[in-house]
Length: 336
Image (cartoon, one colour):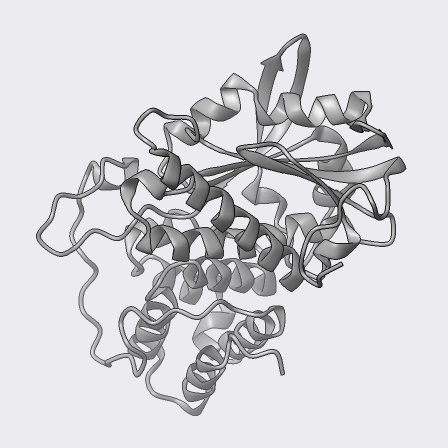
């Protein structure tokens, strides 16, 4: 089998407890989408899924998968950690969606719904069967989930089952932040349950002078923070997809700065960030977790990390520790 391609029914076959990933493209069958746009969307979807799984430590060729027309079902083999579906897969997939959306025409844009579940399943000659498989698709197709994504400005909606939340997310530490998920009661085809929702990704950037997108964040404009006295050494729209190692290094260098060790100092910097960034930062009492939340959120936005560096330099000055932070941000996308 070709490396990087999802496994099918001729490889490993699920039997027993497993982790399930199901997704579909919102509005795939919309009449405004011509056939060639749907074909491109399917091709791009498989490409971004395969790349995101591979880069998250989930080799696609080791996974079972079924095509679902406007979506995909993927099942992890038992030796792969289901926590990787939560992080880094969600963030890598969000990044790929973001880059694709920035270049795609309106009819070819992708907004993706994903459901994650832990349960039992087995495969017969026709495909995957089991009550837990049905449960995953009930979450994916829940009207409440569709409404949440449709009424948001998010590109990616992830709904996690109670079972996976209890085992992977609820008591998680480090890079999995339970506060990013909120409970969502769902009802679909006789299934009454609570899923845990995360919405992420931003809409396409709007050119200067054009109308702002109709998003909650754009309804009430507010004045920009005062311009700091030091220019950021990074381009204003600089963006690199961070590695796990890179994220940790940036957080460590951020907390080497005396100002950023204190809650007041971190709040001073966060409150100066653009509103679209700062309202999405889940603040935490523990310095390292708070620093990780700040850095990770800024890293989701082109120009987010340069803006963070800009305000840190403004409040702390061009100290050796700030220069070390600058260097760490510049190599945040490197593996080693």
